[in-house]
Length: 510
Image (cartoon, rainbow, N blue to C red; front, side, top):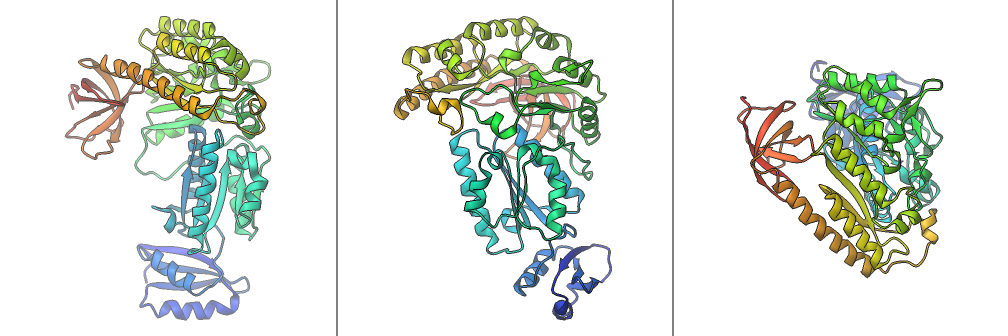
């Protein structure tokens, strides 16, 4: 068997079974060849014809031999990501680490040798979903006993002991503040350790370089972790810890790396990016960071999320006027329209202050798109309070709103607040709010018909027939093209507004 076109797999088996395994593999007509690396330790290398890895794995697993947990060879991983963009960034970090170590990304959970569940606990529902998914993953492992299974994300910080008690056979758990220690966890697993738990804060992660493959057009870059706001309903400060800002040199280097891989648009991430601050004597603020990043050669678009209204400064608003590549969109969660409810939430701003911010933003950029988060049914919210929420929705005219019912989270102040709003009433208010927002969103999209929008092409649409991209205001546009325009900024004439997207035709010469 020639080495070209083959894949090497590394195993550890009982030393007295090496010859037995070699004879078994030789009986499969050259499908695989075995070489002993360390007879005492039982370390062996199996050279497999490309495309037959899964079949050889099935043979080896059927022999009930101890499979190596040394992280080498061509093993496959599968990552399930729940929750926010911060989790997506952390998953991308782990993905790159594994690819760098020679792993391959599996097409499905059932074909993986390592399964990682990146969890969210911002509300009760995603927490329950995470535990259900974990049960499914462990069920799959019954058929693949060599599979490594790990849980990362906010649920680990929030309920690690409960997870371990319920699922004692997990291989590793990593809290969100410790994600940069993932490589060390892999090393410990390779040494045979079980149930490795990492919850102590580590240095904020930097994305490693990945192999040159088809590049993404857009990418996330985390600039900070944690939150100092302690809104009364939120568990984030408890699970992600206090605010920690990344070194701007690391941020800029990561952005340059992503641009070298073909990325055109960067979204800066943080629980509250507005409060980014780095340095001792001469502190770099978030507006200062934006100006630094905007000068990076090759970057065509820049976004950021999420912003807290209390920290949205005039200096930051001025950036929308003075930085051309800063996209014409801001996600600014308001959460409620009632000053009473905002105070109970611990948001530290009023409805009037929020409306003033919107006014300033539209002075800086007249057609800026503002999106938001809104909560209904917070403890103590009356119908009168809810009417204030409807009022601010009408007055601002949000392009898009992410709305949800309040749910109690243990460990937060709001958990103990009364009176609780009945579930039926919360559902009714949510329905009324979403109906209003649907009307406003429809108007926003309709207003773009017969207009020309600049679109960054991200690739094929879900239907496989069209291409899709986004406007500066973060609206999806689908269009037909005879050539692949992925990664290019083009002009599109908007022909039709749909419920959550736009349809148009290219007017730029291809």
